[in-house]
Image (cartoon, rainbow, N blue to C red):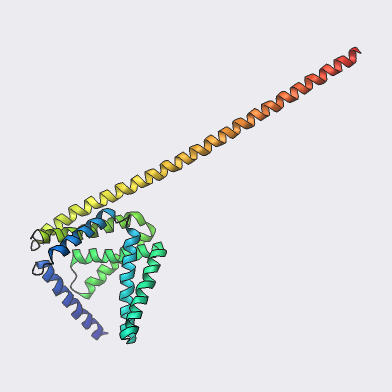
Length: 256
């Protein structure tokens, strides 16, 4: 157990060193990569809820491929069987994310929530990574119960961070991390507001359509009721006319 923990801490240390290099600005991606990152981040930030199924499918395929790699390594597979295991994992988890909506949302929020926590906390030890994972799991469980608000908040913050940090790097200010965080916060807040506005408008349209259906049903019922009342009035007129006719016949018979 101690050996596993030491290996994990060593691996985390290497990842942390690479992350610090990126955050310190000594590593700078190409301009094309930064522009693509900004565009993708803005799409996720502003339209995360609308793109939920697509994002869940992508996350499912990536996590499935990672699970396939882990399984292949654990079983000692190589060559073609290794690729088959990776492809099988990607396809299975990806399809589950597409067709089972709640599973896809769970994996989406789990992945994005962990990414946001890691970007904010900058974990450098196994304990910190476990804390980030725990927060992500809590958010993922809540997303199954409260889909729209959790997805909006998580995708807004994740997309805002992605676009904000890339924008700061594109402007040559990647060494000043506060600038990146400032842009990210503005974009995240704007994205969350826009997504909630679009969602409320969608709900309003659904309620409008439902109210129209209810009015049509009420109108139809009132028309049926009017027709029924007219038929009843006609029947009453016929009955009264029949009674008057019977009375006339009785009078004539008495006269005779």
